[in-house]
Image (cartoon, rainbow, N blue to C red; front, side, top):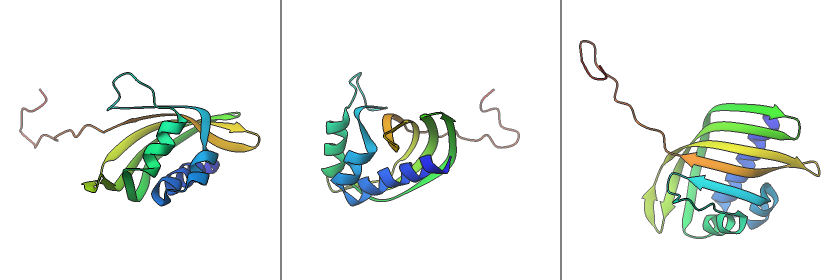
Length: 133
């Protein structure tokens, strides 16, 4: 669904440019965010918007391996998002696996939920190796 990837890119452009208006428009009021750093708490819209207007500086991002499935006014996007930027002026360039739930409200797509985790780097065994056995 091209609409959802356009919304994903718009949201991340809002993060990159620190555009409060875009973030307020794209993030649902009842938004819930969980990441691999979560300790059980769920981050809501205000905290998510605030964090992305504050210490996080996103210089660039790129989506890969997009899988989007639509279910009427709900869509689920599974993506890899490669990012470059900084947190508290320290270099930061993570890759994330996003599972995003989008809802269409009043004709506009908003992100209602995001789960983000880091991909596991799996060392590939060389021919003749016993790794993984």
